[in-house]
Image (cartoon, rainbow over the protein chains, first blue to last red):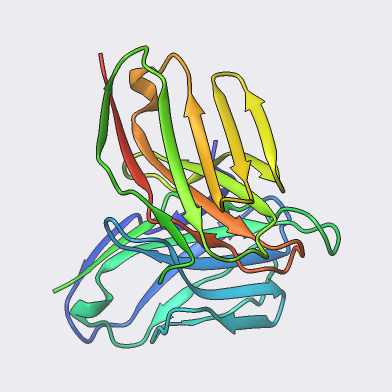
Length: 116
Length: 112
C-alpha cells in the first residue's frame, strides 16, 4: 500500500496552462524528490528538499518550481506548460537517520503529463 | 559517458529460467548499490541494496557487486510471470547526502 501519493495520475492540458502536481507522504520522511522519467531513459532528478523551507534544483534543468511548507507535502508547479514538458513525473521520499547509510527512496505511482 | 550503463533490453525468458540483469559504472566512489523494480504505470520500488562488494540474497533474488570490475548484477531464480517489469539499478556514495544515479532500466518479460 502506497505511503506516498501523487495526484493527478494522468493529466492532458493545453500549452500555456499552469499546472500543479501534488505529492504527499505519510511516513514522516525528511527528504523529498521530484524525478522526470521518459521511456527508456534513466530517472533525472529535477528538484529535491532536505526539509521544510529547503528546496534545491536537481541535475536536470527544469522550468518547474517546488515548495516545501509542510514536511509531508512537496508540490511541483509549471507556470506555463509546453509540449516539451510532456513526461512522467515521479515523487519520492526518504529518511536519513544519520550521515551514513543507503538513501532508500520510496516512490509514488507517478503523474503522467501530456501537453498538447 | 554515462556514470551508470544498463542494457535496456527488452529481455524475454521462459518461466522458471534464471535471469541475469547487469549494470556497469564508472564512478569508483559509489558504495551503495540498489535494485528497483518498476511495474507498468507504477513507481519504482526497492528490491534490495548492498553495501560495497559481495553478494546479498533475498528469496529468489541475489544481488552481486564486483567493485574491481565496476559491475553489478541481479539474479532472479525460478522466474515467474509476476517478475515481468522494468528493473533499474541505482548507485550512491557513502554519505546519506550523496546523489543517487539511476540506470535507464532493463525491461524484462517472463513467458508462461
